[in-house]
Image (cartoon, rainbow, N blue to C red; front, side, top):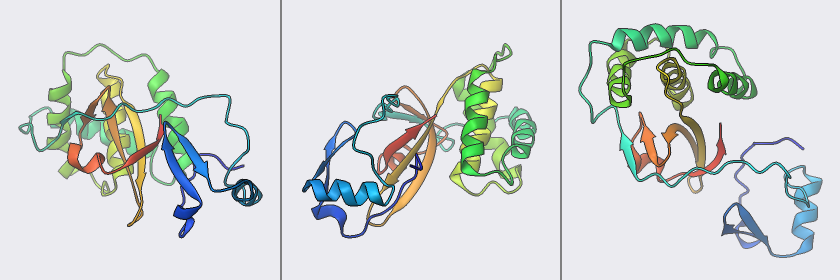
Length: 190
């Protein structure tokens, strides 16, 4: 079964319900059989539980911090991380992010707010950075260089169906807007 895919199953709301805590309710056993046959579900839960994201309560948004002259540091980091981004599939990006999180960071004197300020300053100068996947990948890479570990959170919403990703440390959204990310349900945390 393909893992960590997200789909919008139009018309499935009457047969599948969200019971919270990562559990779903099914209208009957035939629903599970249909989903399993299509490769979209399995009868037994995965023994390797995935971490869950804390509900975001605060954010350090790039719009809430002043620009910073240390944006050049982010820009250099963004250019380096972009080499590992462009032309890569989703699973390759996830694997790279997991490797980044395991690396030993070098010491730094920048704090989180200064990093987001540098991100704000350097981002407009970064080529080809339009989607949230790339922006959050670059910020994850930069934060790790500054000895700051963050979770890369992927979320979805329905009707209209959309997906988004952002960084989060505990219940603090980093480099994105709290109101925007609160509209999404996390499905993967790296």
